[in-house]
Length: 169
Image (cartoon, rainbow, N blue to C red; front, side, top):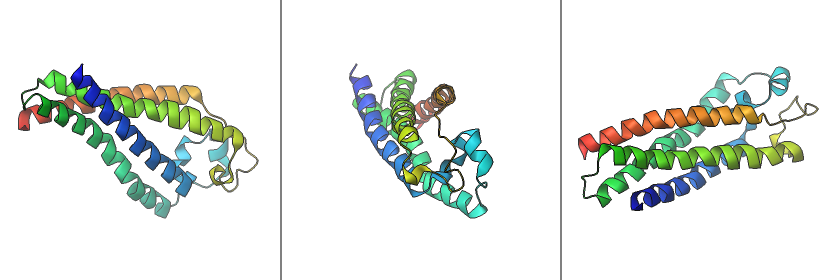
């Protein structure tokens, strides 16, 4: 139980960091997330330019790093609590618990709550040039499927993290 609490605490901190970074990126340029906008919006705005793609990759890199770092941190902390002798399964579960916190936060708080409200309120910074008259809608099924895919990806990542820490710690 102690291991789970450590992993959930780290996952909670990670959720706040990753969520804040995502919202900062969205505020900087909602075009970074063009592929996540509804089809109706994508149909009336130009695709990302090569410069926008490079910038999105550069600005998104800390986000991608955090998706690995927080689950790894949880597994390392749990391994340390076991004096470096935690089982691979324990490490995998610690990493997966932290990952799941990140994934749930992204789905329920960022996607459903914040973007759901924003799609109704329609703040100027969220409306893409050329799509001012296109209604924003949240595709709940799309985000639920994204959560499921994230869960599977997180399971694979957690296996890799747990195995690596067990092998090298």
